[in-house]
Length: 140
Image (tube, rainbow, N blue to C red; front, side, top):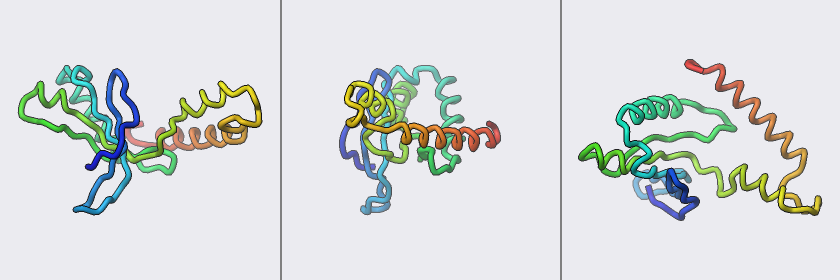
């Protein structure tokens, strides 16, 4: 993994854009989400989260960001492990849906909205397709 730039810094994690390498060749643009030390302070919560993430790595859908995996920077002791957990996800660009919608809401001029009603309807169709796909999984 080669970090490129920081995308977000929240109370639960730091998110960075990165490259997943195969040898020295960039293979996949990805996102690294490094969780804050207290986020996984309970071993039971970490075990349940790891099982859930294992299931998420198997999901494949065009409109669903692929979770590549879960890792830790330091696995020598429980406190070091809990403080260094990260996920690697497919990179979907710097714009989140929340940012896009807020950008459209703060612009009073209808011609300069960040998205159109047709865009929003397309997103609803994509969301419905992903939900249908997820409900067909075992376990749902």
